[in-house]
Image 1: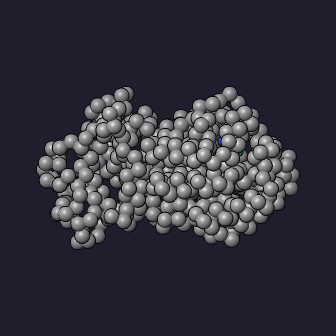
Image 2: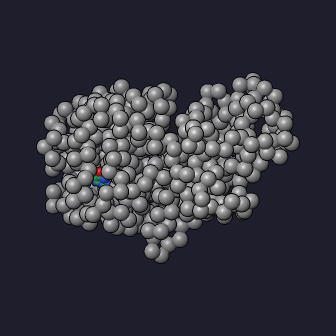
Image 3: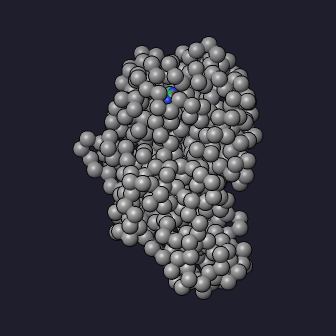
Length: 458
Ligand code: GUN
Ligand code: ZN
């Protein structure tokens, strides 16, 4: 149990259910008759067995009995593209051809602000219904569309690390920026949004990848990032063999693809590199030494046939990493599906459900240098959590919640998707609640046996 004593001023909300909370790659806290106490400021006040906490919290607090459902930390998606939700599932080529055919045309439409607003609203609703409580997001090159995405995220209560894409070469004409404008607009957006609402929204400088950047853009972006402490730098790295070959030809003076970014001052704590498949040992050592984060995107690597993330070498090198959907490179937003793919894509290595759960929650928060605030259910952290009911999915055994917790976790990881999410909370605010076709909550809070014993108020 964790929690401070005698601080119940009657304003907290207590969620009762089966708490599963990641500790590290191989361990989680398992509290079947658990309670999560959330203060009115949206912080976790206490977590533990309800039998230990009820004396302190049953008077005055609102009690939400989730019945036989699971209470877990919200899922973190370390790399996703907002404008690409309209392109999910469109395949037929590898990375560079797919970008030309589907992605660049879809992104060019974000010049139209009303289109951009409509898609951004849809995107943040989709994140919420998938149980994703933090996403690291690419928008497009458009400043107004990116500003709108921040505004909509702010209104909807979403948590995001987000930035305007920067591209000044090798893209269709309507997506190529003037280098200085790209830098100026990125800086303006960072000044406006980084740290918004107590850090719920954070800014990431977002050069798309080395292929679409001049040396000047990369160098100046490195300086800009260094001059804005606390912000992130988010880009793609070594995703496909064809891309790596192209970068080697474009930057002959660099030792490796990573070195292109390193020379520009773009490698450091709070840099996030999506994919990172084709790395040598020196790259891994540099990443470890400079404390940067990798976003492993297994569903995308499958879908675009990009290659296999060297998970064992990354772990051996001690490089921090988490999981990401890379929508629309990946054809799903559900981080449960991404967890499954992270296991499936490895031909020889078994990745346990415990580790997959950790990688999509606390492991990602750690890689993003946010573990002190997010990623697990501990007193003092932000109350970002999900209520999960595996039985909402037809294929799931109806008695699954009576099974061993490792089996529950395995079931969620391997057959889970958005249909298992009952509700999603960010900083204590409900941002999604499942409805039935009549607009009612699918399963009204039942009067469970446990609740009667507990005698909490509804
Ligand atoms: N590399 C450069 N841009 C992209 C993109 O939009 N998606 C993916 N998967 N890789 C990229
Ligand atoms: Zn991507």
